[in-house]
Image (tube, rainbow, N blue to C red; front, side, top):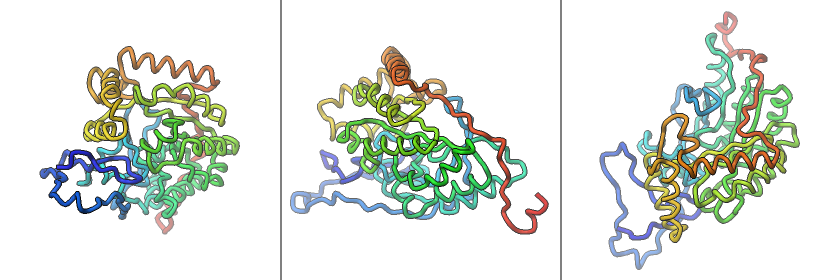
Length: 358
């Protein structure tokens, strides 16, 4: 078995750990030829159509400010090693590791499905969050434009939406977002995990650079679009020290509010993240893992409501206080939810004679 995981260029995970639902465990075996053959370090991204029949996902979590969301893609090419969505790929028979960032599913019928669901006589309008599980503006979106088509449906029906991304590709849709903002129908959150370009390249290998995200934040803010910054995840002993600088930089770029989520490691991430640390930060790995446990009751994950986002214990409380103080100094609100207008909503027509009777 290979003693040192192989770093793949432009990828976050260093392994393809078998999903928890699989009956057969796959392992890389060194058959003796590795000293003669240069290992392949590049993995091409593949994508296929998703066969979903509905597009709006609902939740009842008290930890978040929305009860419904739309995710145009499954899997995410950004490759963020900390992504809480990685374990969801195992439901598809894939690994939460390299499969998550190289085997993608695109919901090309999303706009059509959304229009049909909004047209349902029983539908009640509340803001829809877009891209909360995997980024709606990941590289594949440039080719498929699924998110843009979704925004067109929302604008047409005057339906409010929250967007979150770490991609500058969102600037492409400035025309639609500006029109929605004029009607108080949209807000955008930009995730900035670190200002250190080297750390960002390791943490989020195919995401937009931190400096470019700040520029995107300013572009959106200057266009009159309400913006927030997500300083998430806060990784104890790794990017924790950057809280003040990130909040200040985001505020200077026009962010009106900020929030932060402390790292947790559900399911396969409990193997993937330590593997990543051992490769990229071997001298700090033990200290970082110990610090993560210190905010999770000596565990790596706590999925309980009202605790999973903020952690627990003295260190978690220090992070919270420090973050709130950073926001106060920068003049931004802490986790403020923008109040979007739901009163303008008009059910879209889906065509055909039946629509005359809706």
